[in-house]
Image 1 (tube, rainbow, N blue to C red):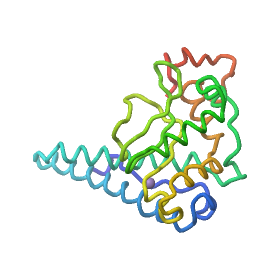
Image 2 (image 1 turned 90 degrees about the vertical axis):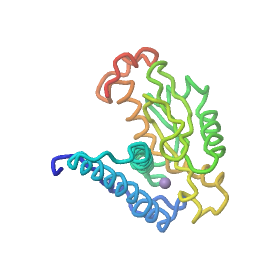
Image 3 (image 1 turned 135 degrees about the horizontal axis):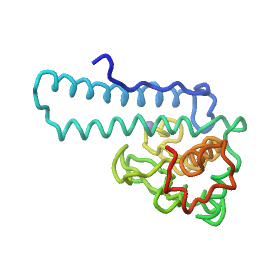
Length: 226
Ligand code: MN
């Protein structure tokens, strides 16, 4: 079992207090060290359970365990992406996108403001626990807005994630109580557009090093880099 891979909690690239006032130091610490760590622990426990069942020749309740694995691994991945697509306001966070992501958003939504309005509405309209997610559709080369329920439902197979916003109550309630819309609006101050652009480049642009001239978002999906 020792040579098998397991999940681990990624360290934040900023301090716990650095995303304030979007989210407070106390809330980020609970969210990262508490909630995210729990998904990591539960995912690893399920992998160990499955490993042990294979060693012992037992058949665990697969439907139940696999659903729990989807939930916890989904939670781990989405939170990892979430921490990574944020940066302290004015220090990498906020402002407007540039590069390929700006072109993709302009082409799809008509303007950055229109994109912001739609994304915010998608986030505001998530019912119960879920995520607002900007994805890249590899078949059309179009960025799409989707909702993910919990951490794993309503997701589109094969989509590639550009940006996520956690709108579970645990993500904002300590700071915003029931004012989710205020939290969703404040998110724009901490979006790390360089990171979102880097993801777009990796997905459809062939990476930062290649010439932007070579990029044709309409056909780039044919040979996705990663
Ligand atoms: Mn969360």
